[in-house]
Length: 265
Ligand code: CIR
Image 1 (cartoon, rainbow, N blue to C red):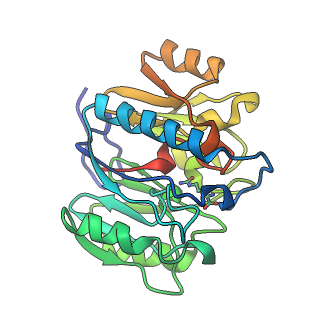
Image 2: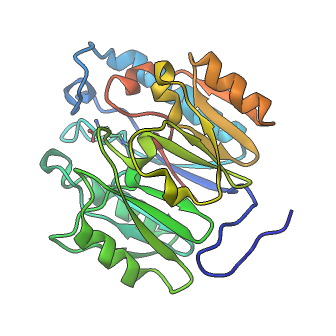
């Protein structure tokens, strides 16, 4: 299979990554923003985070570890403050007040590897809304990411990237409901955005009873997914993916999943 490289096309090769930025679970994690009222067990969250980090390492990624900060209960969801595209890191501006400030430590960590640019107010853009598919950037227009930021993103990225706004509904972020798997396939929980933006990509559907399984990560030829979703696991395996499961129940209670816990590049 060979990749197409014209603007607006996708790349058939699955994404490959060398590094993952992760951020430790703060003592205050049980005060995170969430739509569930399930009780969070911070110690169990720490054990699950360790398992997640080991999973990334087993897939060949080197960890860039940022300590947790008790002032920011949501800081373990390190995907949101910044994105990395090629040789650039873009700090997005958090879309919710209690997370403002998380980006400082993330910016410092990324600045050792990438040149860093910022989305300026009133723009706000969270990494959970940015789905890169080759040189197409699908960006969720959500409660956390606005049109002002999407305009700035377009100017910050080189012309080879196409930035496509995607209005999403009844979900936190775009990547809460879909994941790019490489090879022109997406894992998709339907009903939260207009699927036509996916063009010719082949969807692998997540059953509604397993909604949280849609937050998945394609990493170095494997698919890392949350444990506990046998139908989705079977669909991925039937599609030829080698699946790695990690238990992330304590992060699901905080409206997050496997992609939210790292920035890969
Ligand atoms: C929040 O509401 O900001 C966090 N509790 C969850 C963030 C999840 N992040 C992600 O999907 N990328």
